[in-house]
Image (cartoon, rainbow, N blue to C red; front, side, top):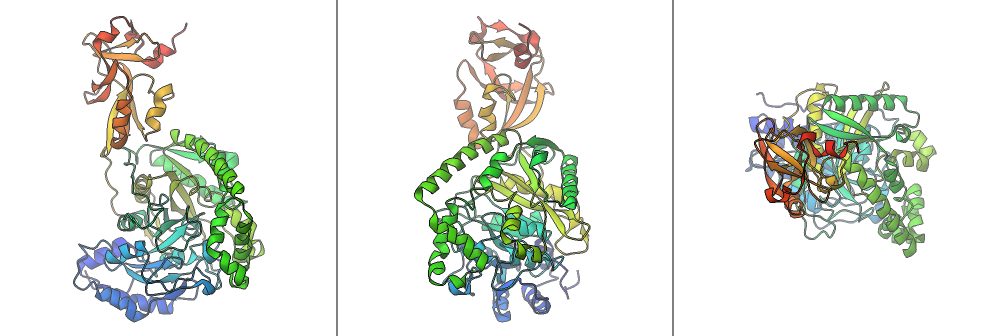
Length: 602
């Protein structure tokens, strides 16, 4: 391969990594070419501060004795939202009066640099990460990558535009109300909003400390996953960091999954017919990838979203900027000042009232996940010109948070994905979300979607069809169990499977060598191996191994778990019954299964 003499339009991690491994590029050569691009790039409100050329070269030189085979982010340039500390530059949170010089980089930044990544600079944001528009900064408005008359989205505006326009390969952002997803949709990027607390927030200026997430912008889901693997290190110094509890990717998930869609009356596009059509296309693509659509009521989610700026979480914002607001109110951007000032008037009673309400809504929203594997929504219903946002800053911002504001309150994981372009050239995006710690499953689904739905990366005009291969499906991390009675779908004990992350794999029958009995309590069947028997209807479920032991421990005698042979000749673990217990039981084998027995005419 020839030595690189110029950079491609966008800088994917996979492309740069391959060039380093082939010897076609060195970190120093990358910095030299990237510096020319940075210096000649049009002013678009991306940066608050940048490392000098010598500073970037120093990071590149530190890799001279390292190997791209040993460092997962070897020589990969990245940007940092300016509410996240980088030791070489001041942290401003887009407020000059608040600025300070950190003694060390944020915990997550240190992990990335240790893995070989090269920091480029600190990016613009809505002041104190308060906003979804990217216009609320004394450092200037950050403009959309595709049309400078439109907003870039916020608060992580500069981070998104830096990735989309080929100034860096990935960027760190933060997400409290949608700041790591809205800019992804507006700039044709992948935006990963991890489970709350999964990535350390040590060295991050809080917006709402109890809700904040460090998030990632990248060109592809595969690139984002590579960054996630490096950044996901437990930080014992962060009181809100949670040890990773990854839910295994269910077997067959990518080829067979249930995705929820909001009821038609809950889908809001605010008059954007092009966005509505693109969402319909994205839904059709998910069906083509093996998804089964399920209409769900998202009202509990929408009700939770209303608490974010009308509850105690607004007081968290006041804790950060309140002293400055009292002593130097002119230092805050006018809209930001008006929003945060309301946090001073909340009482303890207001807080507890909101906490009670949120808990009620969480119980109601949790019921959604018994019906679906992921929820699919537009990332935003529409996009606005900068002039429109400046004329109606609060109302239009609220509309942008319609599909995003509830996620951290309800402890969900999410990933925003590109989903095509409107006729005017502006991108549209969808978001997949799931319960906490489903990050791995969301990334797996997103990677497979990339392979089946070719799309442009950032502002690149080239349709990319070569994505890193997605991992193959297997049952690692899951135990398969066959159920034949009250644990079947829709029956009373099925919640003991779904509540533990169980996934229905198939409806099938046993080999024709079992007899089924109605036990004397009338609530359960017992299945016994008998060569004179018949095929019995069963469901095979995949249950996370970490939850399998507690599930088995709840099974009362005379039932237990043993080996069950299926009609295709394979064997799985499944419910069996002690032979002595069926001597006085009713033989219901001729019904062919428990569900058919329950449906018998009286």
